[in-house]
Length: 429
Ligand code: SF4
Image (cartoon, rainbow, N blue to C red):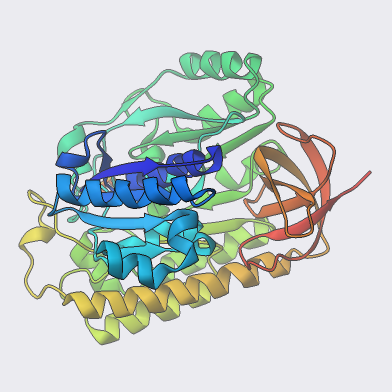
């Protein structure tokens, strides 16, 4: 879908558009600067003065007149004052009050039934999980994929596998580090296939980056679970290689995995994970799950829920299946009804939130080095709160009046934050 975003008022409202734009892109949508050609318009309103309220209402009305067929979503301060009245009076499809802003894209996707299958099967892992920031860069090391997962359009669009030479990648990372970047994420359409066209492999690339650059933190992007390179676990002995893997499983039912032409069975994944966690105790594994793949029965769905629960994933990316013309899956019989997909998606979101809380809680009391990123927020008590990630990708909030941006700091994780999505941490001297 084409999405148009518009903000009124403060810089924070503007900054939120960046986050939403990234989240929409990760869900497979594209942005448009022209409201008239959009399928969905999102307006971040303001209420700081009467004039701001008037302008907010005017903007919503104008957007509706310019493009009556587009779905309209309203958020921000004006929308939060009296959401029901604002919705009824202005005829918008959805109001997302300020307290739910962080989840605007997932709320809009579910409530308005937006198709959320990503265009690029390999992208959501890194793009939605980890934002590009002033501290973090994504390095594309590989393109193309040899596999033919039946829902994936990438394999048709991207052609044969091609890998960048190691020297090139090392030079780019050295340059980025010289420019202040502290963390890089290696990405590819089929990252596990790195080097298949040049007699190299992903382990050799990671070793070269660790040996020939001083970049303090190195991560891997989304990696197909059947394609983990040999020697991967030994790499985690180096503390600069971050113990977090995003392994997109897509389903926990082997019959669904077969229809998807995925090459990993659920019990193989479980065995691999048990071995991995013994070898790398703090390893945090996150995944993607497609909900409502054609023909997904109640029994197959229950198998997926059970599998996700047993694997204790630290974070889930959930996509409601929508067919993509040109893929084999788009021709499969027995599509799953919308309301069933929504119901299943809600259940999986609830499970994902619980597993994330469990994962975070397991690390309360532990100390980690955190790379502090982004602008700080001010909490209800007026304290400045900074944000960052531990090596194993746990989000932490650090209260500190000292400027911390772009610093690697040692923190102790004190408690699960009240929002249940991160840990509250304090600086260790
Ligand atoms: S492994 Fe499958 S999902 Fe991933 S890019 Fe290749 S064909 Fe697409």
